[in-house]
Image (cartoon, rainbow, N blue to C red):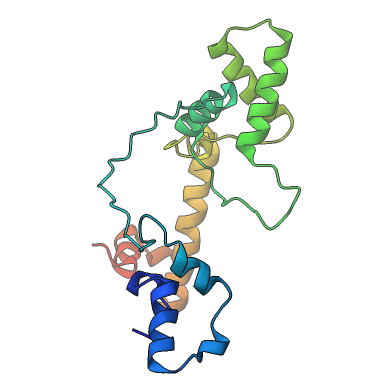
Length: 191
């Protein structure tokens, strides 16, 4: 007990008293306060008592949800258009995402106050298209193949068949007049 420095194993007074009894501290080296403490001891011993902690259930703090008007626009944007084909480039400090540009354009058009929310959403998309920012709807395929001219489609098909017949003639050394669609299919792997 004399070597312990923790107050929970006795008071400072009891430790000094025990050190003096064992001869480690000589009576001439005793602290000044020792005689006063011995003459007027406290009514209660200043013992270290571990505080009784009862299990406290934390109260659920109700934090109000914080929604800005821009958040609703962003949510609609991501539902309709998704995140886009490319990842966000956060390495540039001045990078502005397509969604943020859309929100900025939306709030700009809303400040004029001429349109309803649904029409305003479409107009913001059209305004970004005028600026050269293409927005593709989520899950939509490119419309380029459907919007081609059927005559152009036919010409492309003919050109592809001609290219394939040239390959067949080169690999088999057969004149062009003898190459049929059956021969082409044979070399393509379909019969």
